[in-house]
Length: 162
Image (cartoon, rainbow, N blue to C red; front, side, top):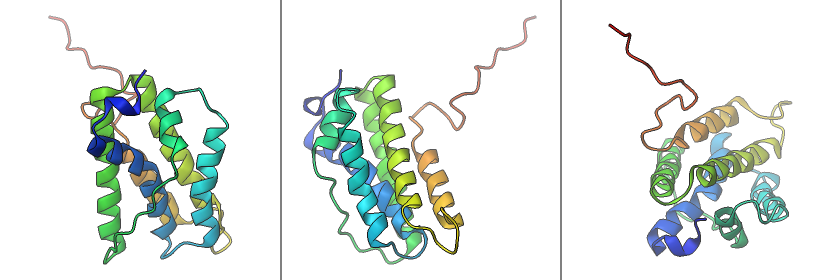
């Protein structure tokens, strides 16, 4: 099993900042979040802690308080580029050090957290706004491990036999 000790401090910072950064991206998708959406990030960590033991890597990740991003972005596009970059870097680091199951668990945690944030506050009568749906799709797209390609479930292509 992979643990925090397997990562350099910089690598761990990247991996551990992925989930709250994804949550922040969803919070800001509809031009600013609410208190409920912000609390959803902390609640997702609390709920994940109740499932302690499923993955040592996730246990260590969720044992720490999620770090809030303090960087000021000039636009949502700038925030989006940053957040998706962090998630991509995290997947690169994980692909070099973690097991396939740990990588899958990490991605599932990130997506679950982001969904909880999106569902925390209805906007314009919708449980999840179109902007939040788009952010969720972007997050899922960023959680592809290097070499996995855009469609991880696609079967390998076999050249026709001669």
